[in-house]
Structures are given as C-alpha cells and as structure tokens.
Length: 283
Length: 141
Image 1: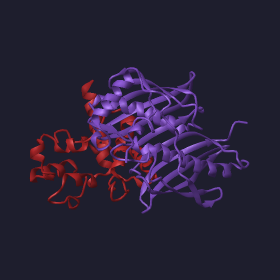
Image 2: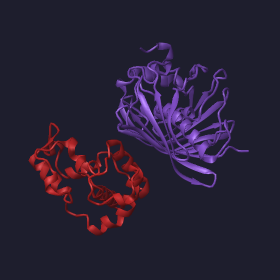
Image 3: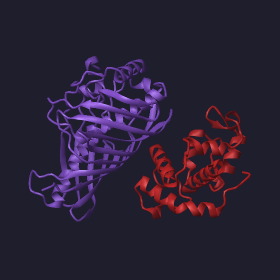
Image 4: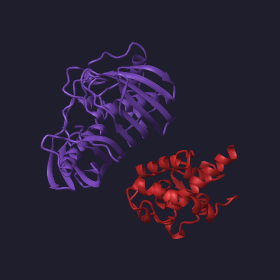
C-alpha cells in the first residue's frame, strides 16, 4: 500500500525546523515547489499544523501523534504561489500525552498569509499511524540539514459534484475520496486517512460557489474565504469513502457572507463541521 | 465534599458556561439547561467534551486537566478503591453519586462502567468543574 518514496514527501510540508524550544515553540521553512499548479490555503494551514505536530511528538517521545480535531479560527490573509517560501511558526499552549493546543502562522516574504488560533489536536498512539523510529529520525533531519525541497508533487482534489442547489440558501454535493493516492502513503503509512485539510479545501470551494450565487458575482468570479471558524473533525475519512457535503448560508452582512459547512458519511453520520466567511473579490 | 459548591457559585458561572456550550455544540443557548444530559439530550460526543473544556479554559482563563471530572469525582479514593477493571466499586459508585449530587439517582447504573460516566454529565457538572478550577487557581495565588 505505502510507497516508501512518498513517505515524508507526498503530504509533508516542513522542510526544515530552524528554531526549536522544546514543548513551547518552533519556526520552520517549507519551499512550495515551483512545478506544481497551485498551493491552496488549506495546505498552508496543514504546514503550520505539521510543525505543531513535530513539537508535540518530540515532547512526548513519539508515544502519540496529534490528529486534526479542533481549529477555533483560521484567518486567510494572502495567497501562496508555487515557488514561494513559507516561513512557519507555532506557539504551543499546552502539550502532553492527551492533546496539543497551539496557535501558529505562516509568512511569505515577510507578509502574513495565514493565522491559526485556538487549535487542538488529541494525541493517538503514534505506532498506529507510523513507525516511531522513522519519525524520530525525520525530526533529527529536519532540525539539522533539513529535507530535500521539492518533494511535494501536488494533490488532485476529489471531484465535488453539486447535487442540489437552493439558490441563496444552500448547496449540497457529493464527493468520493480516491481509493488510492500518493498522499495516503504519507498520511499515514500504517493507516491511510484522508487529510482533514483536503476535506476543508473541497468544502470551501463548495461554499465559494454558494457565496458567489448569493453575492450575485459574475460567472468565474469567486469570492475569497477570509476566515474559517468552529472547525471540528469528528471521524476519520478513509480511502474510497463517500462524503456528502452541505453548505448553508448562516448570515450576510453587507457584502460579507457566513456559511455553515458540514460533511456526513454515507450513513448520515456527521464527520466534520465548520463555518467559513467570504468577502467579495477585491476589485 | 468538605467545601461544597453552592448554588450561587453555579449560577454565577452558568450563563458563560451555557454560551460556551451552545457555541461548541452549535445549538441555541436556550437549549442548555442546567440539568439536561449532554449526550442523551444534546447529542454531544467525546470530541464535543474536548471542545467544551478547551473553550471553558479560555472563557474563564483557567486550566482544566483532561480527565479532571473523573479525578474530582474520585476525591480521596485511590484508583483501585474507585474502580476495578473499568467498573466502579460500590464505594466508588457511592462517591460518584455524592460528587454528581445534581443527577437523579435513577440515572446511575449499578454496576456502572467508568466509560459510561460521561453519559451522566450535564451543564451543571461543567459549572462545578469551572468553580472547582477557579477555587484551585485562587488557592494557588
């Protein structure tokens, strides 16, 4: 199942950890390959989360690894383009064998592009997901010479097909998670899980289509997600799983719009919930 | 408990607890009654408990170690006195009933599994948790 070449490559977004205060904070770097077509904001959030994961795993000697669960607020402040260099930062509020709570951000050329606040990831036994020794060795590499850049080859977002659109109110879509993909070998080698950030990326695109309709924007003009709140992941999504996504307008204020997002599995059980806010595109 | 938590103390924190819980559960604040079962009445899951505790810590600027409700409930009993192989001992069950005195007696199973304790939790349980943490923070100053 896992291709060894994809481990620490197909879905790993920290090239080097440049500063490290055990259990407290870290700074890191990720070079976005110039060869990929795009690097969505959710992957920037993933990079920040992965830096926090390294600090917390190292702190508890790789007994556990955090998984995405709660993100109180993510502020999308700027676009990241292929070829950009992300300067990553995390400040850990608390980390132990149960969970890590943190905030973090990423800058490109001195400008903030994303900010994460009030994030919490429960720790699960690391050996269920990856080889603890491999992680320990990887951390040593990241703290030293760093990993070879340009390992990431991009991800293909699952197709999201709108199945129901109530104009001005809601949009429902179904997506099928690929049964196999390179990122599953990295996320995670012993237990493939569809990354929460890729789900959120798909959901934001669905919400953007709804927001465009509500704001009356012309075809091809998409509003920009400015903030995501109340992210709560309730269950893992596995390869090949069907996910039913729903975007519903919560409120509009002037030209801004807030949309509630939810995702359910094929049996109707809620997998994830969140809220996203859009502003119209800058003219 | 030597220094019982009073109704006034609970009422003082309840409005903020209710708002915090409503935000975490995505429900109306009016749905958060002091005595509603969070799992059976409001469909809360374990991730919601984590979320609620995380939010309460920030709302009240307190620290609530994970597993604190069970620790508080256990009081001075050792773990072995409180439970054996995941099931409460008779003295453990008595202690739990005393700590969760706001919960009607018929909601306690006998025997009772430790993993089922969260089914008993109500917003009042979390109010007591907050008050206890506030007291401990004050005592530590």
